[in-house]
Each structure stands twice: as structure tokens, then as C-alpha cells.
Image 1 (tube, rainbow, N blue to C red):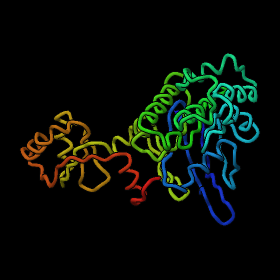
Image 2: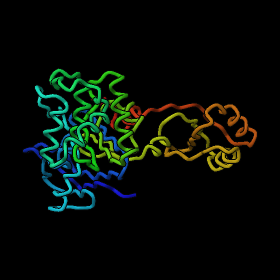
Image 3: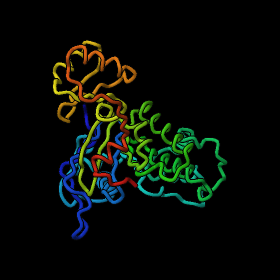
Image 4: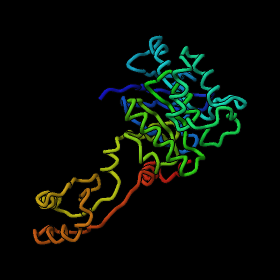
Length: 305
């Protein structure tokens, strides 16, 4: 798998405070990477460093496989929306985008209508000032601004923060469409973990400035989700019986425990087969763990933003 961005022990200190410490992050090309962590964990600081808005105190990173001066030239292929969109409140969406296009040497006539349509603002009154937009409309326009110049990597810091459920669904649909239809890689931070779970392909968990773990959506499914948990002293025998039934059974990190993904409606059938095979069955029950539960367990129960 190719990585569009990799960091090597990237660190950022402000005086005596270390905001980010020795982070090794790997963002696969063409995927949505969800960066999660509590308030003040260092998410925004990481995003500022890899988008060229701040310099690491230590460590380095590669962008599209480039570092140093070559990496600096590649920053033109990175779209950024960190914190509030930088909009001119008295100008319309079209005018804001036109200014951004001119600044990047992009033809506004060909670009602006397509971007507005792409983020669901195509039907907005062309005279309506951005300062009168709802929060959801401003976020959509902010994403459109970040997409000027057809970036290959989009960096979005809390783009769905404060939106109503419909606004969140709309932004999610836009981002998934960008990934699927244009192959854009997206790094997104959010404290709404349920929504990240619906669109991210992989995740990074940051806590107190350190990256605790990286995992794919598939790995998350194996670690969380709805599954049958079985505890037995004879895990080898139990695995043989369960796999003979066509079950997707795997050992868990927890001693004497097996996880069966799927087939959650066949719990009684599993128990009967194990007992009939002479397997000492200590426990069998259903577990449902969300991305949020998994994250809270990993960070010791510290609540997200």
C-alpha cells in the first residue's frame, strides 16, 4: 500500500510544553484517514505541521514521497481547512472562490461552478453574502475553497463540528464522493466518532500528543463491532469445532477467549456444538463495541471533545 504522507517522529514544542511527541503516522493514498483524540491531544498541531502552516521542532515528514524543498513544492497539491474557513463575509460564495482561484492561478470560469455544485451550493443565490450563510453552508464553502486547484490530499479539521444531523450527512456524502470519484485522499479529525465510523478507511488515535495506534476499518471491525465472545480452556478444540461449522472464529488477545464475527444469531447452536464435542465452555455471550467504546478503552475512559 502506498502512503501519500508519512511522518517520522514528528514533534512540536511550544516553550516547555510538548504538543506533539514522536508521531509516526501513515496515510494511505486514496483513503479517508480519521484522526481521533480528546481536546488538546495535538490533532490540529499535527495538521498544521503537515500542511506547511507550522514547522516541526523535531522529526520530519514526507509528502507524496518527497521531503525538504521538493516537499514544499508538493504543498500545492494539498487542500486545507483548519478551524474556521477563511472567508470574506461580505462577498458571495462565487466571489470567495474566484479570489482563491486567481491566487492559485486557476481559471475561475471553469472551476467555480463545478466546485459549488460538488459541495451542494450550486443553487445558492449568487448575490448572497457568505457572512449570512448558515454554519453548514460555510463548511461546504470551506471545503470547496480547499478543493481549488484539484488537490490530491485534503486536510480537514473538525469539518462537521456544530452541524445538525442533515448537515453532517451532507458533508459525509461530499467527502465519500470526493474519495470514490476523484481518488482524493482525506485526513479528517472529528470528535463525532459515530460519523467517522461511517466513512473512514483507517484511523489514528492520538492522546496527550502521542499516537497510540493506527488501524484500518477492517481491523477495527475485528476488534469491535458485534460479535460472539467465547471463553474456554480448550481454545484449539473450540476453534476446530467452530470453523467446522463455517464460523469466522479467531483467538482474542485475552487469555482463553475466542471471537466469532458474524453469525450472532447462532449463539445457541455454537454452545450446543461445543458442549457435544466435549469442549469445557465457561462463557458465551454477545458483545457490541463501537468505535467510541474502543477509543475510550484505549485512552482510559477520557471522553472525546
